Image (cartoon, rainbow, N blue to C red; front, top):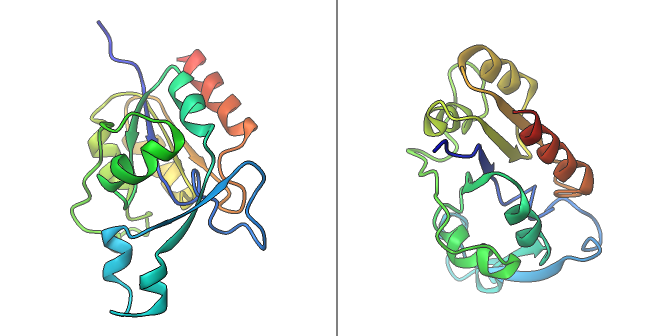
Amino acid sequence: MTKPPLLLIDVDGPLNPYAARPLRPRGYTTHRFHPANWSARQRPGSRRLRRGLRVWLHPGHGARLTALPLELAWATTWMHEANELIAPVIGLRRDLPVIEWPELFARDPDGLYWKTRHVLEWADGRPFAWVDDMITDLDLRHAAQHYDARSLLLRIDPRKGLRQRDFDRLVGWARDL
C-alpha cells in the first residue's frame, strides 16, 4: 500500500499567527507556553520568561488538518513539544512524527531557509506539502531542482495564519497527485 503524501507543519506563522496586530485574530484563543527553545533564549527570572510565550491557536485547525488526505508531521522548532503543547489545544493526535533539527537556525551556505535541506532529506522521496511562514522563492527553486517527488512549499502569512485558501490549495494539490 502506498503511503499518503506528507503535510509538514510549522507552528509559528501557520498555526500561531504571531505577527497579527494589534488584536488576536477572530476564532483564535490565547495560550501561554514555556517551550524549551524559547525559554533558553530568555533572561533568567525575567518577566517575559515568567509569563511565557504568548501563542494564538485556532481550536478548529486540528479537525481541518486531520480531514486533509495527507499524513501530518511537525516541521517546527517546537519539535516534540508541538505534540505535548500544541496538539491537544487544536485537537490533533499527540504522537505525530517530528522532524528533529540537527541545529536550530543554522546559516545555510547557499542562503536557503535553515529548515529547507532537512525537510527535503526527511521527506525521503515522498510527495510532501510544507506550510511555513519563512519559505522563500529560493527555497521553492531549490526544491524544484533537487527533489524528485512532487512538493508544495506553501508560505503562510504570519499575520493571518492558515486560511481557507491555504486549506483549499492543500486539498487541490493532494487531489492532483
